[in-house]
Structure formats: structure tokens, C-alpha cells
Amino acid sequence: MDREIQKAEAEMVKADQEIFAGKPNKAIRHYGPAWKHVGHAVKEAAKE
View 1 (cartoon, rainbow, N blue to C red):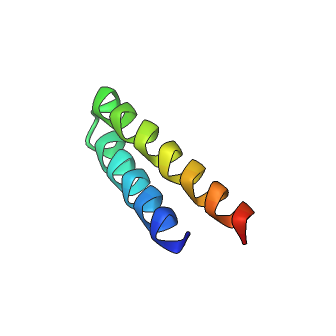
View 2 (spheres, one colour; view 1 turned 60 degrees about the vertical axis):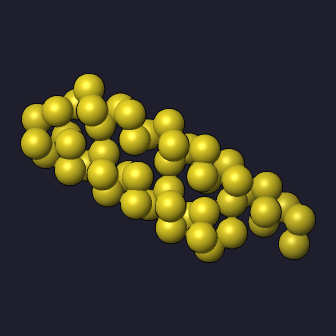
């Protein structure tokens, strides 16, 4: 679970960097994978 959360956080950092660089269209590409990783983390947590 922790690994999936770390991956999600990394994608959010990338999205933030794109936003601050004035590239919101590129930032959007990182939100989808972030949510995917969060979903995996939730599924793993539910098993515990």
C-alpha cells in the first residue's frame, strides 16, 4: 500500500511542477495515474 501511495504522490508532484511551469495540459496527464495508484492503495488497504 505504501508503495502505491508513494507513486501517487510522485505523480502529484509532477503535476504541480507542470502547473507552476505554466503547462496545465501536461499536468492533467499526471492526475490520472495518481488516481490509479490511490485506487490500488485503497484496494490493498481493504484487504488488511
